Structures are given as C-alpha cells and as structure tokens.
Image 1 (cartoon, one colour):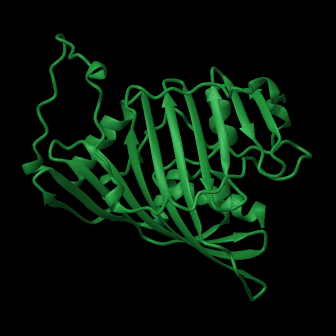
Image 2 (cartoon, one colour; image 1 turned 90 degrees about the vertical axis):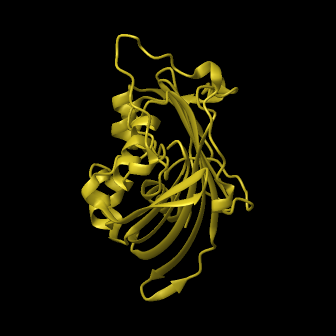
Image 3 (spheres, helix red, strand yellow; image 1 turned 180 degrees about the vertical axis):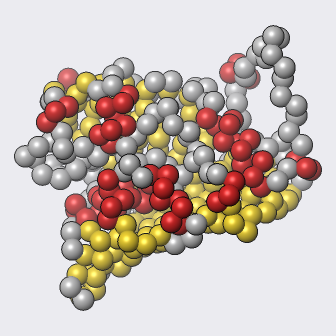
Length: 304
C-alpha cells in the first residue's frame, strides 16, 4: 500500500501546479523515497491565498538600453493574455517558494473489491534558489517526499526505509531520472488553444481571477516523457482558478483534477484539489541538509 500511495501522490503532483518529486530507487533496495510526517491541518481553501510581493531590494532595475514593457492593462486583458503575462513573470523568478495545500480522496478497486483508503491532506513545498532546488511533501499518511538538489548533488530520503542517499547529478540527469527540470517554467505553460470556458472575473477593486478548464487528454501531453503516466487510464477535465492583483500579479492558483489509474493491478480513482501560492520571491535559499555527512553516497548508475 505504501508503494501504491507513493506513486499516486507523485502522479497527482504532476497534475497540480506543483512539479513531480524526486523519485529514484536504489537498485535492490525496494520502493521509492521520503520521510514520514503528519500534518492534518492543511485544508486547501481559496481564502488562504495571500498577496505575494517582491521585496523592494529585489526589484530589477530597468535596462536603459532596452524598451520597457508597457504597463499591463487589466481592462483589455483576455484570460489567455493575462495567463501568458503571469507565466512570463513567474518563469523569471530565480528565488521563489511555491507552497501547495492539497486534499486528495481515493477509491481503490482490487479484483472487484473496494479497499478503503484514507483521505490525504498534504502540503507540498518547492523552493528554487537559482540552480538549487528542493521539494518536500508532508501529509497524514506514511508516505511523504524529501529531496533537494544543491550544487550538483541530490540529497534524497527513501520512502521504504528512510535511508538517506546522495549522489552527483547534472541538471539533465535530474530531469531524466526524476522528471524535475529546475529550468522549466514554475507555472505550467499552457497553449491558448487548450483554454475552455475561460473568463476573467473582477472579485473586488484589488482582485481578479482567471477561470478556465483544460482538456485532460491534452494536459497529459505536457508530461509525455514521464514514465509514471503510463499508469493513467483517464484524466478528467482539469479546472484552474488563478487569482491576481489589479496589476496582474499572481496571488495563487486553485486546481481540481480527477484521475483513474492502474497501479499494481488495482484501479484507483483519485480526486484532488490544490491551492498553490508563491512567496519569498528573491529571498528563498536552498541549502544542503545539516546532516549531509550522514547520507550514503551512491552512484547515479545504481538508481532505477
């Protein structure tokens, strides 16, 4: 069941605005990786969205040799143009912390028998610090994720036994092995033609939201090279509500999705809602674990 939960959580991370987690396996050592942590107080609520501000000392100075972008005009914005602006802004962040609060409910059918699975409440924290990256997921199950990439070294805690491993890896190695591309956009770059039933709603004088639905089959193509998606049989239309300020700056993203998967002979239906917020822009720091010396060094060739 632990391996089943681990794979399901990684798949659901893929379909939220969070990235997928480091998920290596040391050959001969069993399942995946991560620590056990319990947190049952992370209900994802739209009211939790907080304004994200760039610290004054981190505001980039305009290049006098380049033409400055014209101020964004919310009055003439379309859902597609506003989302494109947000994608461009967030992709430029070198230091940022993305926090996703997720609620997940599942039903598992094994050979026609329904197997009870507890609802999952989870907090996923991703940190970007220029070329360094970390992801941590804590929840109310025995499966969570603890992985960081610092100065060309991956530090990972395995799910099955809590063993700590570390190994040298290039950014390409990290992307190939775990599906984490630290140079990828920090919010999904969605083609305009995928938007369905999109609209901008003015919630207040200082807050707007973009609402849209994405076709599940098209969404899967974003992750065509991610092997775990071979387990997915069906993806529902995925809804997103993106909250922005009157100036077109992001506050948060609320997403919902339903997946039907075949995992180790079991059919799993998983429903998820996720609220992602962006903070510590310009000040996020990712460092090696304080106990880095206790991690066992392995060669990347040992990883499955």
